[in-house]
Image (cartoon, rainbow over all chains, first blue to last red; front, side):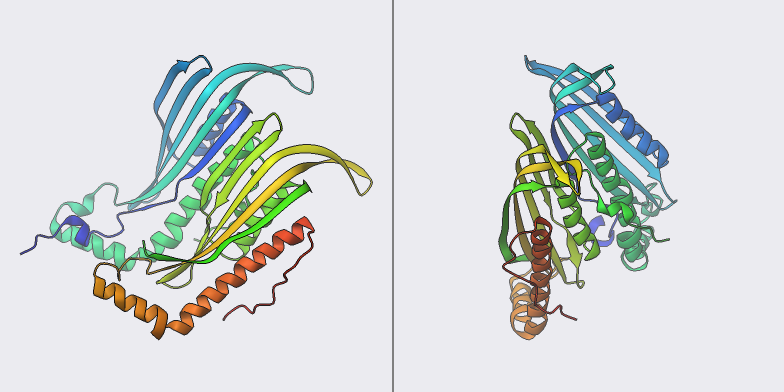
Length: 190
Length: 175
C-alpha cells in the first residue's frame, strides 16, 4: 500500500507573494533607505531582524554590501506574515553632494539591487501537526474552511499593504521615475 | 501551473517626444487597478546614464475569471534617454520628461490553474477536448474579453500620448 506523504493531506500551509525587484543605478542616501525599511516594519508592528550584513571589496570600483532583513508579524494565532528584504549594493562609494540650500551631504553612488518577498505561514507553531489526525484536520480546514480567507484576505493584505507598499516607498526614497503606485488607494476588507 | 495560451503577441507602441513618465506609469497602473487585476511587478530597473535615464519596467497583472481560467496581461516599458526639459504649460514654466518610450503588451489566458488535468495524458486530452470543442463558446468569449481589455489599455496609452489613434475600441465587453 502506498504510504501517504504529508503534502498529500496538508494543503495551503503557506501562501507566497510574487517577489518584487528594484534595480537602480545612480545616487541615493543609504542611511535614509535603511531607516525607511526599519521604520516601515516598526509602524506595521513587525519584528524586524537584520540577519546578515556582508561587506566585500572585490575590485577597485567600490564595495559590495549585502543587507539581509527579515520581518515577521504574528497577525493571529493561526497565521503570521514573514517578509524578506534583501538590499545589495555594487560599486558603492561615498560622495559628497551640495543641496539646493548650499549645505553639503554625504550620499552613496553606485548600483543597488532590492528584493522583497512575503509569505503567509499558516499554523506557524505547528500545533496542528502533532498527530496524523490533527494534520488531516488542518488540511481540511485550510482547503475547505479558510481557503477563501487565505486567498482573499490574508494574502491580499500582505501583498498590497506590506510588500507592494514597501516597494513603492523604496522607489519614492530612491526618487525613481516609477515611484507612483495606484494601488495605494486600495482599501482593506475586514 | 496550467497551460498558457498567447492571445495577444507583442502589441507595441513606440513614442519619442515630450511626456511625463510618472503620469504614464499612473495611467497604466490605474487601468490595471480599475479593471480589477492583481498586480505582479516583474522588473523595475532604472539607470542614470550620461544621455539620460534608462528605464525597464515590467508588470504582469492577472485576474481570475473562474477557478479554471485567468487572464495575464504583460506590460513591458522601455525608456531610453529620458531627460528633463523645460516647457511652458498654460503660461507657466514647468519641467517635463523627454525621450523615447517603447511599450510592449502581451495578453495570455491561463487554463487549468490548479494543474488538475495535467497529471495523465488522457486527462490532458480531455481538457483539450473540453476547451476546444465542448466549452468552445466560453473559451472564445474569454479570449474576446481579454482582447477587449488589452485594446482598451492600448487606446488609453495612445490617448495619453495624444497620438494619431488608428484604432478605437468598438469590441463589446462580454457579460
